[in-house]
Length: 103
Image (cartoon, rainbow, N blue to C red; front, top):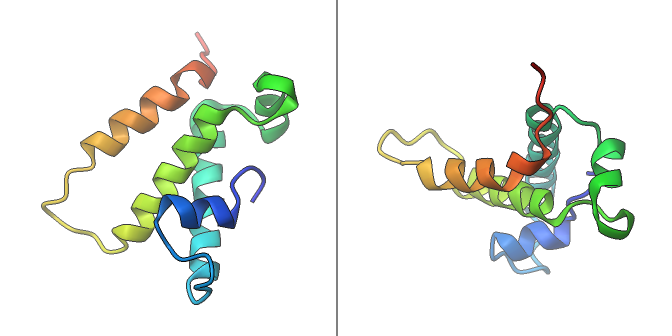
């Protein structure tokens, strides 16, 4: 992972930091969330890093990645009646200032 940490993912998902049985799965979800953010924004890690404060990765994008990772971990199976609209809205709002617009 480039900007998410396992420690932050565990905190977001309310997982005891000492519990290590799911570390590989959480790391996989974290990597997938980062790839989604790069894909959805149209920017690379290096380009987004330049847009952060004091050369830190933008906090909004870190939060978006943590939200995705924790949601994917919590809801691992496809659930028909689960509404993802709140996650989608929050995610889209958090990344909106960083999306590359091509006209």
